[in-house]
Amino acid sequence: MAGQSGSQLSLFTPDEVEFVAEDELVEIVPNLRMDSLNFICGDYGPFYPQIAIQVPLWLALALKKRGKCTIRPPQWMSIENLTQVLEGERESHAFQTLPFHYVEISRLLFDRARDDIPDVYMVRSLVEDIRDVRFHKVETNLENFTNSSLVLQWKNMAAMEVNIIRAFSGRALQAFYRHENEQAVPDLDRTQDRQPQNLNDRPRVCRSFCCIPIFPLHHWIDKIVFISCLLDYCPTIVFLWRAYCLFVVPLQRNLRPR
Image 1 (cartoon, one colour):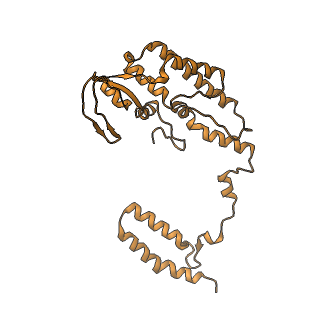
Image 2 (cartoon, rainbow, N blue to C red):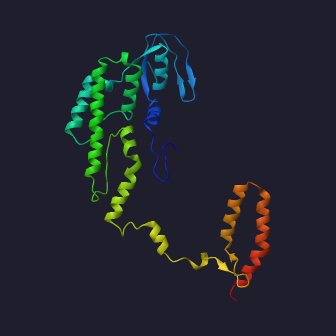
Image 3 (cartoon, helix red, strand yellow):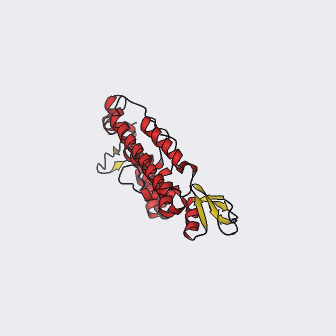
């Protein structure tokens, strides 16, 4: 997966998050007549001049680029609504209600359809202020988070904000909890090392052939399946099974206690 490195959780790049946001529906006003467009994601149209219709953002931007439509800004991008959201973000510790992809949608509209947005510079300034306040709120909440808090609930977070903390939030919470309750959440690696090995699962060694370990049947089946998957060759299974029946089974019978 994109952005995955080693054992770290997957982290999407801003371009990938923006790509996902392009499936959000927006309203356009076509300036031409066109039949319905049939896509895998659905059918959109027919299109009539000066009649508004909802289409995915990627289709709206494509039609806008060719001069076939104008894009109506979403209602949440009005100056009045953004001003109220900004005041609420500054006065409250909670996140105000905004679309999940508000950062990506506004960025795409500012870059490719700015002439369709009234007072675009004021709207851009408000959106950037809201984004900065919310990002600062995320950082502050993480800094103030202590190991005494076992549950952390953040509502109304946006996609880009979730993507910021996605890579380390899970491990950070687990580390805090383990530090506070070492006995309740033991280290799995150390626990497995301390656990006594089951005698039935240990490889048994033939007395006559001390250099040949004799494993139980399920170990051999795992090896046969693994090798056959690597080679993708059926005669390998037959050969290994015959070798097991001819050599391993008699040795195991000789080692059984009488």
